[in-house]
Amino acid sequence: VDSLVRGGIDRDYEVTLPAEQGEAVTLSVSASVMRGPSKEPLAIVCVARDVTERKLAEQEIQRHREREAALHEINLATTSTLELHTVLDMLLQKIEHLFPYSIAITVRLFHGVTKQLEPIASRNLDDEKWKSEEWEAVRAFTSQVFHTQKMLLIADIQSDPRTSNPPFFRRHGLVSYLGVPLIAKSETLGVLSFYTKQGRSFSNEEMDFLSTLASQAAMAIQNSQLYEQTKRQAVELERANRVKDEFLSVMSHELRTPLNLVMGYTEMIKDRMLGEINPEQDRILGKLLGRARDLLFMISGILEATNIGSKTATVKSTEFDLSDFLNELKLAYELPLGNDLTLDWEIPSDLPVMKTDREKLRHILQNLINNALKFTNDGQILVATRYLAAIKMVEFKVSDTGIGIPNEALPFIFEMFHQVDSSETRNYGGVGLGLYIAKKFTELLGGKVEAESQIGRGSTFTVALPLIHVEERGT
Ligand code: ADP
Image 1 (cartoon, rainbow, N blue to C red):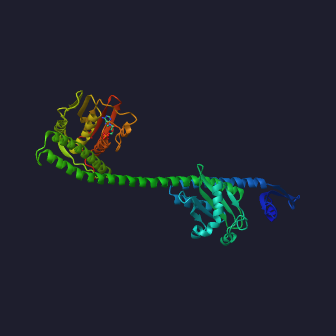
Image 2 (image 1 turned 60 degrees about the vertical axis):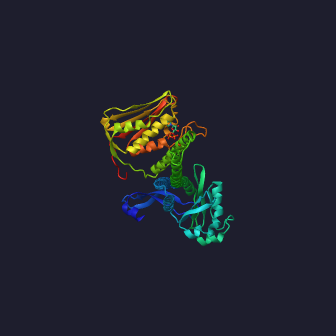
Image 3 (image 1 turned 90 degrees about the vertical axis):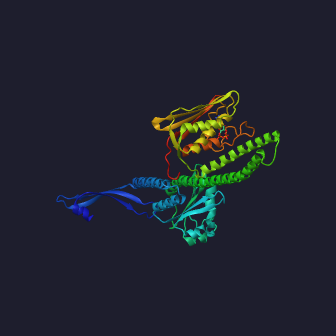
């Protein structure tokens, strides 16, 4: 009043009258001074309007804004990492800051193996005690929330008839319980529980907010659980792969020793070092040796492939004349073919000197040529080589007029042990390693291999290698 009178100006202000009963009331007051002829104050006129509703609406909007911002912040924080414990830590920390009064928060997640709601993280509770048996008293509530997938509010947890152990809650000074299910993509992951400590319960608004927050948290938790599961699986897979490679490597090693012995003795008998043999015995021993060589080839293939897998394969580059190399390879194939099948070589006279791992190149081409022979009954197999001077690459093409490879199988033929027809009754021998080795060797030499095929018409395999293999570190 004094300041009104002294200042002589009209004043508008808002007052909130504390509630003695019922709700607090906010008034908007306009006050002005009525003055006499010589400006002496005569009276103060006050007009007061009840603006409680407007005030509440404003506060509501303000709170709404704050919560939106908080949800956004929580979303950012919990999606910035996939590490479950970091996600939960950030989540609980943010929730705690949002509440004007002290609350305790706990997270329990359902464990697929123990089939229990396991204690995972907590705030404002003695963590050791919380994880201990004492908290069995709360289990009933959390498990109800989990199974009904509905929020549960117990306003006075110390005296509610549903509470099995009231002294326990009194001892910890916990007043209200609010359990919110963590549901993501219709899977219930666990329960987020809140406890008030200072004689007050949760408002409807807070409950709505916490429920929105829980669904956001559930998504983040599910993502990190999936991530950790994938990580575990990757480790297991790698281990399984390593065990498989080691097994194959040891096994093929162990098989090779006795096989070499069998072959050695067979050769000795065949060469008549142990006495005369008749032509029939000679023929049979020849067959025996042939099959033993096939077996050795397959076993060596497995050994090589597993070496590639364990990265112990090394490149030994030397310089050699490409035409000489191809003519030598051609000699090895001068064997009788079927009547209607020819094996032709295109070896241009001006091929350059190449520097790469000669043995590996021979292995690659042999695998492709052997396949062409295996899968072609009649027509032509052509091994064509050309030098692409502009890009300093050498291209080898092995094409056949054989059975071809179905389109849908083409992307997989270079995989280990992959065969288009892997049935027990298949017509062609082999273990599905030839192309795998060819591809791995080609890559080791810095090149690329591709396959084209038309079923019933034939297949073409193209290998492109750098003329000069540049040694990489470690090779
Ligand atoms: P395999 O020991 O079975 O020959 P490869 O890795 O060499 O193993 O080949 C994998 C599969 O690719 C073969 O089983 C076959 O189905 C297919 N394939 C490879 N080369 C040819 C070809 N020239 N013509 C038809 N099919 C082929």
